[in-house]
Image (cartoon, rainbow, N blue to C red; front, top):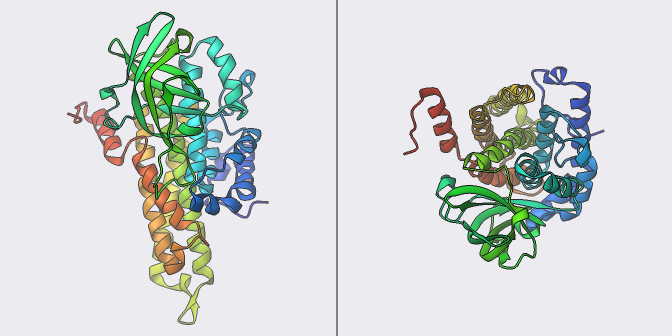
Length: 389
């Protein structure tokens, strides 16, 4: 049985199906058994625990909502969200790996790819025998992906790609990269395999956040891509933005996991740490901090549960995903800071997961759209007025 019992102040477990609970508990146990014991060391060394990839595949963590014929579990989106929640309870970097594999690599291949591309790549990605990455962000274009300068030029039998991508999770270790480039002025998706001439993926070092995750550049210099590697159904900025919606959905759930782990550490510490003759959890100021944490976690849980139900009913708006990503990361980072405050000096040590979550969440707050960008997305939706320019 998992050491971690979860945070369920509103008895939301009663709203989950038996399958959803089984999935959640299975991944919760996986994190306790395989992630928690090693993650502090991986973080300190600045290395991704690549030995976990095949184990993650065995649990069904890659593309779990896709059809069984590709080796996937055909789970619903609430179950998928709960998977991401538990993985990020372990570490944001581990959840990021799974999010990229599922939402940013398998999803575009499934949605925009040919039958041949789907039949070849999806089973390999689901089994962990292949690792993928997603190349959209560029050195000068993050929040404005439409400004990308990476170009593809049609040549006999394929395309020649030139440009660069930055801040790419899994890039250096990826076997396949889903890369977005402008072809005759229109954004298209391409599959670029590791070892392709003119393609390099140097790892970015010096991070104080997401240290147990591989972050890379992707560089293309006269890189020839066979015509068969174009994602035939991709077209326009809408295609990569659809992928980002999938990733943001997982992030919204994942942030809850990081917040729960910080709250759990602070609660346990407050119940045992004695100062001035009694546990610090018995003092008003500490109790207020703990109440604020569980209050915000509960609201985020309600937000994500309804989001998942809407997604399963095909009634989801991408702006609703923006709200969940914006809100849940915005609540998780202050919770990490409050938990660090409750733990005092102990909160900066690797004896507790709090400072690691706090540093990781700084990246999670930025990638896949900052708070401000998502606020503008929602603002445009409710007013009908575009404030981006």
